[in-house]
Image: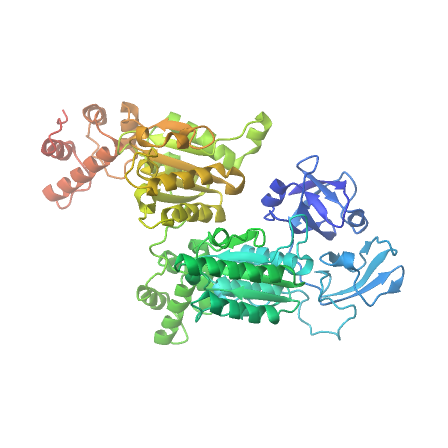
Amino acid sequence: MRFVLREGSGPHARAEVAMLTALGLPGGGIVSVGDTHVRVVPAQVPRTNELQLPQSAFGNGAGTLGQAVDVTRAVLPSATSALVEVAGTQVATLPRELIGVPVGVGDTFTSPNGQIRITEVQPSPHAVLGPSTVTSLPPKASTATPGAKPPPSSMVAGLDNERDLLTGWLQLVTETGEHGANGSVAGVIITGPTGSGREELVQAAAADAGLRVRHIDLRTVTTAERLLSKFEGAAAGMSSGTVLYIDRLDSLLDRESGVRHQAAAVTRWLLDKVAGAPGVAVVIASTRASMGDELDAKDLLRRTLTIAPPDHTRRKALLGAAIGTTDDVDLDILANATPGFSALDISTAVLEARATGGSTLSTEGVLEAVRNTPPSLGTMQLGDIPSYGFDKVANLTDVKASLTENVIWQLTDPGRFERMGIEPARGLLLHGPPGTGKTYVVRALAHESGAAFFSVKGAELLDKWVGESERGVREVFARARAVAPAIIFFDEIDALAPVRGSSTNNVTDSVVAALLTELDGVSSRGDVFVIGATNRRDLIDPALLRPGRLEVHLLLDLPAPEARKAFFSMTSVPLDASLDIDGLVSDTGDMSFADLDGLLRRAAIRAMRDDPHASSVTADNIAAVMTDDGSPTTT
């Protein structure tokens, strides 16, 4: 991404949060600028594409004032040692203003005591200075590549971006404490389904940052008192350069309200301790994205990293890492056979295949193990990108044009809205009779936009237990944000969000309130577009339908003759060449797309019944099933 270099004040660079988000650093981090590296923080700058640099960055090779340069996100190791000169004299203590600063050999900085110069740094050539950096050089190390990452665990295969991001966050917390106007940060939350590789990812990222991980085991903890004892022991033993890893906290927060509130308070106490300890960070692992809300500690846990359920690409990477490169297996076939598998499921299946098939694996051997391994994520709703686009949508020219303007444009070219000084719509409602293709056209839209697609039936989120339905709403939006750009499609949204006060229970009223909260959270939703579909627009709470929420309303009525003709021209059912398409279009005027699809399916079955060797549907086949249905026959 290109920025125009401007001079700024303070030790760090500054840029607009929107530009940093595009770089994958919404909260700031380290970037490469020219021949140097700087830490950048979000701030208000005069122009969106400006990067304000400290004066030292220009002297260290960032570029020249006013120059447009490429800026990229960078992950640097923590400096184990460095030689630093102040006013020409080597110092024994690292200057405080260099804590958390990325440096390279030969870099210079200004200070009240004179010019600071970096004469050596390990690992070289660039690293981040921190509280644990010593101002002397160790003996010459081995021939390993400086700053090289350790071999990744097979559980973190396919998580390169997440690994880099978590490494940067851990460095930011342990090296600077993120002290600022809003106080200190204790750490981050990492969420994802069980078996997704959360702990392995933390271990890998901590190793990249030069930190050690201390695991706080909560498997035997069932009370708030026992939790406090565990955390007191962890707090007493904290030392710089440590990441406290906390897992299985969910089980305590799932207990009765008394224990839940006490556990949240005890956790908050530990977070306060960590925030005040230099060089220490905490990572809380959870299976749900609402952990920050439940702990009421967003000020201390400002960042959440979500590991999405493995898609095809990551499943292929996981299989490749677990199997290795010596075995003759087809990873694409195996990835296609493992939807719903977590990273742990895949690792387990490969281990089983090795146990039964020996050291050399085959595609069929792994497939057999896959068939014997139940997918732990099989019931989860996964973000998916459908395989068909608008070319498979019969006609509906106006609908496709409106979807392109309101959804695709803002996901692929948001600049056109900025030029016109308007905010794009964030939600849309499709309404019309059943079977008119509402779900089908939305899935095609997801393909055209390249967005992950989350389809939710309205009634699926309703739960009789207090708070569970609202939590389900938050979870859907959290998963969508994690893989943005994404489209959330609420089918039968009238069942989920009816007019408040019209129901005999308070569940739907609370769900409406939760939906309104998420829909209004435009700044935090990222590239998430919400679409609802209904057969009864009049039953939906009006607050959801106003501008700023589901503001664009599109009617999908029974298909017009040209749409029905387009449907018959693109159907996968082979139609006999003698079939009168125009006559068929004329005789199906009261049918929806679903009705037409059902008609051809029944006609194909009738054709196979009449002739086992049939290869196409004839007019007689269609006439027969239409007569059976009580519909008019073709002429």
